[in-house]
Amino acid sequence: MEALLTALADPARWRLVSLLAERPRPVGVLAQLAGARQPQTTKHLQALERAGLVVSRRTGQRRIYALRSAALRDLAAALNRLADLAEQPGGPGEVFERHGLSLDAARLEAREPGWADGRSFTFHRSLAADPGLSWRHLTETALLARWWTPDDLRVSELVFEARPGGRIVHEYRDAEDADGSDVVAGRAEGVVDLAHPGERLSYRLSPRLPGGGIAFTAHVDLVLRPTGAGTDLDVDFRVTDSTIGSADFIAGIELGFGQSLDKLVAALAAATTPTDMRSTR
Image (cartoon, rainbow, N blue to C red; front, side, top):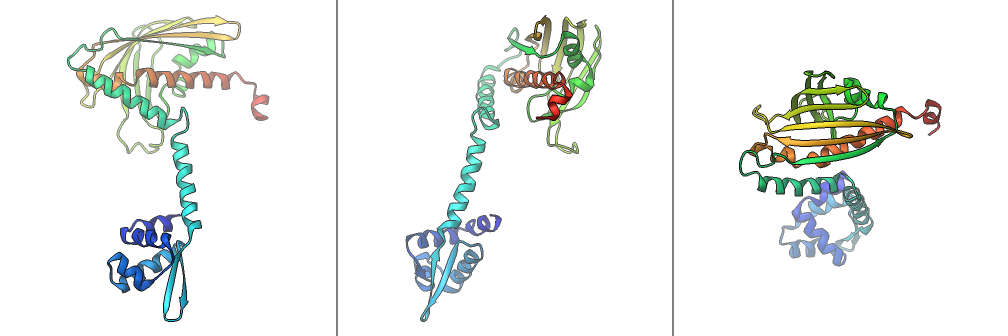
């Protein structure tokens, strides 16, 4: 496939492929129609033949070239597979487009400090674990790190002191940035306001702008209620201290925090599945 793409990347070769799609033609005629010298045209045709795009046959004094449609169909199929992957419903491509719309709207709104103050987001998730295990996933760094980022990101630094006045540091990078050489995707610092194990957790968290200043302050209140099947989690996320530069952050709250909570649901579902059942899947 790489050889095929390389061969087609040259505009002169693409012109020859277009001409051969109409009918097989000799080198001399192809050179005339392409407005090129015959030796140059021959080299291009040889490159296309090596890539499997054309075949040639000598007839008398002439060499006739013809297009191999199978190679183009293989390329078209590969491109269609990539397009289908990028356009899968609910997939990363669709999420990227949704985030782009939110981003454009937020940037239009962010004209002065305080533009988003008082804005709130609510989330509800049903967790397949009891309040005790759910609490551990909300407060223990080893467990928190498994879910506390949106999709395609990973926690790179985490401090969470689950007591009133406790310190919070949350830094994250691209999930595929294995060696940390790419720029930090985001960093936030905050403090725990209230911690009633298994019942309620409240904290303030301030994402940092690239220059180090505060983008806004998130007041996050999480309430856990036991149910017959596990735990109901209700989250209230309220914005204060919003700056003009906070638009990019606030635009991603609903989508990004929602993805994080979905990862929490999945992590707890896996944690409460018996080992013997998981081994047979």
